[in-house]
Amino acid sequence: MKPKIHPKYVECKVSCGCGHSFVTQAAVPELVVEICSNCHPFYTGKQKFVDTAGRVEKFQKKFGGQYFKKPASGQKAKAARA
Image (tube, rainbow, N blue to C red; front, side):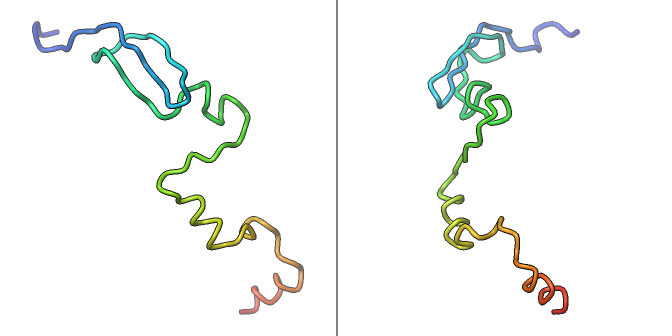
């Protein structure tokens, strides 16, 4: 490796939006993240909407919560013909 071109590797404090914080190593002394392993749905097993600028509410308002419901058998046949 070439000397004097790589950033210094220092101890880094990582803080999450949920309030959890931990220490690791990185090229910067401090990081602030929105989601960590303590609050991410993949790791917790709980569904949680991470909403940015009201997009989830806008979607729910547009489709009225009916988007994920299965259509009745009569409506499905009509949609296939159209």
